[in-house]
Image (cartoon, rainbow, N blue to C red):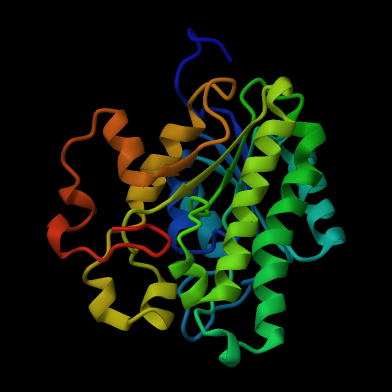
Amino acid sequence: MTDSTPRTLTGRTIIMSGGSRGIGLAIAVRAAQDGANVALLAKTEKPHPKLEGTVHTAAAAIEAAGGQALPIVGDVRDEGSVADAVDRTVERFGGIDVVVNNASAIDLSRTPDLPMKKYDLMQDINARGSFLLARTALPHLARSEAAHILTLSPPLNLNPQWAGRHLGYTIAKYGMSLVTLGLAEELRDQGIAANSLWPRTTIATAAVRNLLGGEEVVARSRTPEIMADAAYEVLTRDPRECTGQFLIDDEVLAAAGVTDFSRYGGPVETLERDIFLDA
């Protein structure tokens, strides 16, 4: 990619973990508006009573927005499943330009209350899954002129309050962020970007509704579209100039010239600040 290359995802191929709903789906639909190809590796094949959408309804939304979709039912925790997803994506679209590490498990329980089974689930999906998907796609990213790895994880904030409130989840999310930190340095000379993106506020998703406070917190949250628009800005940057960064959604958009955030929810003074971000 050079400075003269249009800032667009037209014709680019994205492979994303998760994406059946929420932030991941919003990112996929935004990319599809450019005509991007999006492969979704997700477990939700059939409707869930508490979760809207499946990998198939997400694929339909991507194609309705103008993109090409490849729904893949699989598990980001499983090496064979991830390898198959990467192979199928390359077979269908000819390569991979972007990896989006979106899949994530959450449990904010304090240490005595967190079952090891849940701890292992968060480690396997969040940290291991992000490492595995990026690692498996690397040979194809190396052949792209606009290669990005975007991980939905927070800044590495060592303020002890965060680990002190929910140690298991903090370890899992910071593991994702270490994937960004390490890959950005390791892949810098190859021109493959690795960045993390995190929301300033809670986002109105099923996870927030079901696990973080219900409709009251949803009412104080921004919509997933703010993360989608911020992700778009990151993924259309020159990967040699934008890598190794821990980015916040509204800061990315402000740098792109956005001054009115009201369409994403607000007013700002009523919004709930997301975890891992100090006041």
